[in-house]
Image 1: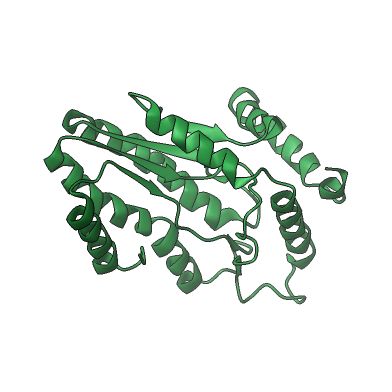
Image 2: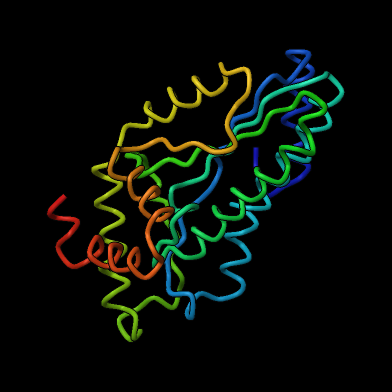
Amino acid sequence: MDVTDEASVAGCLDTIITDAGRLDAVVHSAGQSFVGAVEEATIEETTKHFDLNVFGTVRILRAALPIMRKQGGGKIIIIGSIGGLIGLPFHTYYSAGKFALDGLVEGVRPEVSPFGIDVSIVHPGDINTEIGQHRVATANSDTSSPYHEAYTRFVAHYAQAEHDGSSPELVARHIEAALAKRKMPVRSLAGKTLEKLGVVAKRLMLSKHFEVLMSVAYSPGSAKKK
């Protein structure tokens, strides 16, 4: 389906209901990586990104929830990102979208719980997929930009981290385990121990201290050290 097209989403779910008779679970993972400095990304670029990553999720929920409500229950898992719990420089709009999904899931759960519907968000760390090959960069990211040096370093770091990331099977097993639970958690993490510790550190540390930790993690050469 094309999650930016409401008719496409509805048509896909209608086909499933016709073929299977019910919709027990939805795992929504459509999305795209988008990089660039906040100042340089255009409104048109960011609108397109949010239409896919955020409103695409909204379209899935709006199409699936009425079906599940009528049949008396169902489970929905949204794929977020650890970047939806920790803001990532030059991946800022991507992080903002994933933060939005985390809030969306937290808010919708009590709305649909009385109908037997459970919604959860899984935040993976760096996963070795083709996400980097399909990454979109703002058109204004060129050598004349005052952000160019830092931008180039951060994007290289992300690409290396994805290359060295966990297998997608890790996330698949995590999702399988979540769907088997009677009650899914609001959010969960699927990644390496160090990535999970980063989320815990942000929760426990003062913001200024966590920013120092992040600056060290993304310092020149840190990706090579990993």
